[in-house]
Every structure is written in C-alpha cells, then in structure tokens.
Image (cartoon, rainbow, N blue to C red; front, side, top):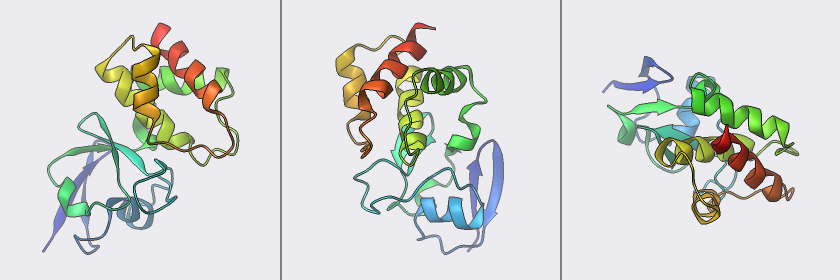
Amino acid sequence: MTLTLHVNGRDHVITSDPDTPLAYVLRDELKLKGTKLGCGLEQCGACAVLVDGQAVLSCVSSAASFAGRDINTIEAVGETDIGRRVQAAFVAQSAAQCGYCTAGLVIAATSLLGRHPLPDDTAITEALTPHICRCGSHPRVLRAVKQAAET
C-alpha cells in the first residue's frame, strides 16, 4: 500500500508503514526535523503541526490518518503572513529559551491567529494549554502572541 501525504505544499509518497506516527514520518522519512518528539503521548505539544490550518499533535496519530489533508510543519509556517508575524514576535519577545517547545508553540499561535485574528487572553491561554515549556518562557510567549495579533 502506498501512502501520499501533502506536506508543506508538496505531495510525498511515503514508504513508512502507514501506522507509523506522523511525527516520525516527518522527521525520519521527510527529514523535517522542526517537529519535535517530546513525551510521545500528545501531552507536551512539541510535535504540533498544522493540519488544514488547525494545530494537531502528531506523535501518536498514524500517518495514514492524515492522507488527503494539508499538513504544514514549522519549516513552512514562515511562508504565510500570520506565520511570519508569529515568528517575528517570538524573536522580538525572546519567547524561546532552549527552543525545544518553540516550534509547537509557534504552530499553536499561528493556528489561533488564523481562526481568531484578535484573541483575548483567555483564547490565547486555551490555545497554548497543551504546550509545555520547561524553561518557563510562557510570559514571553503570551506577549509574543499578543504582539503578532496586533501587527
């Protein structure tokens, strides 16, 4: 069985077992290393990708479950206006420390602003809730999302 995934604007024929979690296919087969593997239980948010514009955790769900959907990784986020604004705001606010969680947080913020261009604090907090940053950069991340929304 062949599996084709539409990732970052291109179709990719996948040779991995279709039951392989998407994060592993992205990292190992497609060599897109921006999607991180943290907990492997969809509890830390490091593996977030955009699927049809929505932030989705990818470390448990099979690659086959994403067939026919538009998948964008952190490597392609900067190709959109919202993604560029989010990335610039993260830099301006020094919203990353070690950087391990940053890709997932940027994905979550990009997804949020795509749905709600001017989110309130509650909406921002809810969008970022599944994401864990052990370095404690959450206050700077919140400021970055607000900055990206205002620009």
